[in-house]
Amino acid sequence: MNGALAHFDWIRDPGNPILPPASDSSSDNSRGMNPFVLAVDGRYRLYYSGGDADGHHRLCLATADIDKRPLAAARRDPRPRRPGNLRRKKWCVLPCVHRFGKLWHLYYTGNEGSDLGLQSFPGIGLSVSEDGIHYERYSDQPVITGDQTAEFPNNRGIAGGGSIIEDVLPDGRVRYRRYYTLATGTRSDDVRVDEEKHCAVCHSTNGVDWTDHRIILSPRGDIDNEDIAVAAPFVWKEASGTYRMIYCGIGSRWGYYSMSEAVSDDGYRWHTGDGRANLTLTPDSASSGESQMVEYPCVVAEGDSRPRRFYCGNGYGATGIGTAVAQVVTTPSD
Image (tube, rainbow, N blue to C red; front, side, top):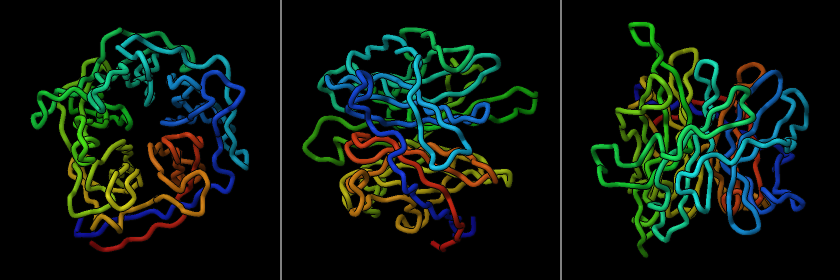
């Protein structure tokens, strides 16, 4: 890409958070995180992970009118069913939804509640739906596990924050790319060991069997906003053929998540600039909800195709879910 990194300027919504935790809810009164948003019939469907007072997490759903301003999301009932077992004694988090033929697939990450740190997340599970709202588990077993890359064959931890895009093969079949987080950290007093994460991708033709796992981005020791972990790769392809990715970095600069942007010609080899130029949303000391961290992005095209980003803030969503819109495109050099 000739050493240049196309870059968006993101403007936070002044009404953030658009979906704060609800004190009168038994499902999400302590946390709202991991937003995954789809535009369906003039409304946003906002799937997210809600935390309750006991520290358990389940998948929830809110909706919002796409054209209404200020943008505000309202919880709806029924929520997507709490899907599968998947050893998820404690958490069911990180929804990712995509339509495969007549069925909606809802992918999610389980946490077994053990004391293994990132290795307590044993797999990505699947539930299916005909309407995108009411889900039934496909299996109690994960459909994607964290031991499939050549670099980390004995790893267990995996997290589903990311997106799915479609490629048309020469024979006319559709192949799906699933971007996700490979959580390789193990319990340690060294945060670089304890919180180590990489961005990865795998492939499928049916949405159930996923193969060809590849690491596409790893922490960089020379960049203080992502020298510990990179995670939650949300990828989309523009009409021009350029692939864009918003991802989260944990680094020694803040100690928590910030969000950065990368670009690619093929969706596998990514250009991130010098590590500072590609920062697109950072903790904001003036914000009561985002002073500590910003994380878990989901991007949708809105109106004139400008991107809108959904994300969460302090305390991994303890202050709820916010949004920002891309306003200006600049092109800084490496």
